[in-house]
Image (tube, rainbow, N blue to C red; front, top):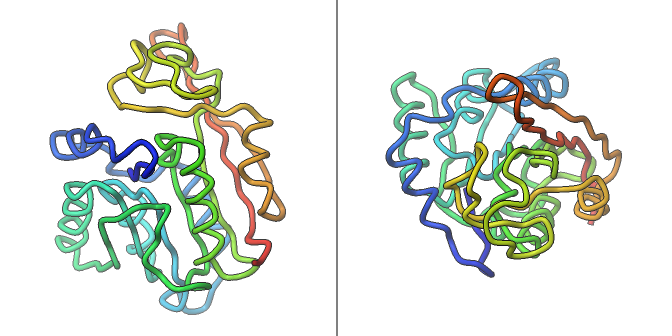
Length: 228
């Protein structure tokens, strides 16, 4: 997961991806987004899709298996290596690179669709804005983008060290404890981040932990590139 230049790459994600078997399968909202948007295309190889903050490649693997032309980027060298190894074992290919979401290495108007699944949340707000500007740059005009963030209702919010509004480091509890900096979103903050996109649609997904004692909640944002 790419970290901002403002706070520096957080080595915790390299440690996590190098030591855990984690994130092997795509979440339902990603499958639904890809299926509803692109399954009717006559030649899927002509559809270029990108995942930013791709981690060890669960979503990249899924999209490649479905026949799309896929790219992925992540800060973690171990994550990209694991993604490449998984694809190679199944005879699949993808354009994978280690890099920063706020400086994407592709030309303008490259992709027919882009997604990120709770990867931007581990960046400071200024770097999230920079990454979203890069998404708009490399995404074709009118093309779709899906993103997801943890909300302020998520277990662990408010613990640890408050670094910026709704942003905490070294949280002491919850599923994000031990994962470095985390920025949680309110509905208003989410709207501010995505104000330069068109057709913004927001849903919430949630689940409970420890016998319904705690809530984990995400915004799932689907939108389109409004143009430059």
